[in-house]
Amino acid sequence: MDTAEFENVLETVRRFIREDVVPREREIELSDAVPAEIRRKAVDMGLFGYTLPEEYGGMSASVEEDARLCFEFGHTSLAFRSMFGTNVGIAGQVLVNHGSAGQRETWLPKLAGGAVASFALTEAEAGSDPSGMRTRAVDTGDGFYEITGAKRFITNAAVADVLMVFARTGEGGKTTDGISCFLVEKGVPGLVVGPKDAKTGQAGAWTSEVFLDRVRVPHTALVGGMTGQGFNAAMRSLAKGRVHVAALCVGQANRALEESVEYARSNKQGGQPIGRFQLVQAMLAESRAELDAARALVLDVARRYDSGEDTRIGPSTAKLFATEMAGRVADRAVQIHGGMGYMRDTTVERISRDVRVMRIYEGTSEIQKLIIGRALLRG
Image (cartoon, rainbow, N blue to C red; front, side):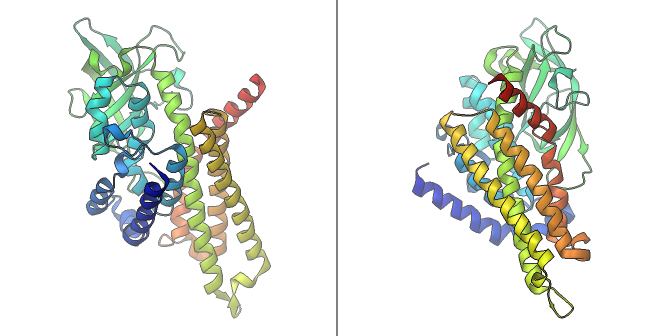
């Protein structure tokens, strides 16, 4: 997108979130679902495919543009972004970067048009470490693979039209070699999606277990047409997705700070606004300083990712700092609100629950530290 076009998209998204989504946050929380009309508008705005290539119906948004949009998505319930997050992020990017021409031509226009893709990597014994993966795909010798296994915490699985299922095709044991990725369409015999998980936060953003019992898919479902490429495909998508998650945390922290400032101005104790108390001012100041630092870091990392200068360490540093920052800012926001901050109808209470998982998915904070440390030692 050229600058003027992107700024127009950004302003449209900002206005839509504040006028249409924010007023319905409580409804999303209580119903555990995003209203259908909000979903339709998001599809019409092109949000289900904004990072996908223009030739397939997307907007070809850069990583920096994605980050700036995520600052806005993070202003509201994270369920809104979750509707299309797997499309524009980890699942869609597997197809963009590793899919065959036929797979891209078949699926990317559908995703840009509102179909949903899921990224089915995590298992009970293969979360941060995919080498423990047990799901297996066996070539049956008649033009098909047969996939058997189970996946856990799979975002959008319940509504997915297609799942990027990672399975072991090699003979290796606990290794990332021999992991491949397959396109598994909804409704195929043997594919069962479990009920929505009951989570601490992010109501309306659905995750589920996925079970595969001898699911048969044709050889054409093998992403890229080559076995053993799944691990690299997953790690490349996850690295880019870490910038996306970091930017969402900037948006969430900014909303928490805005709510805190307004509460400190209006709520009174002892006949005066609590914002006059120096310890409240100190919490606001700490949050603002950390928020500004995270925003600057995310934008810098995004630009260096776009230029190709750093696609490995930067995403991990951004995710590590921004997700931890969001937790601290949200915690201070609850503290500033006092007892009201612990009530379920308070925005900062929801944010404090919603941001907690950001330190876990797309690679835990501990994994980010290992990535950064090992990369630095390699030089």
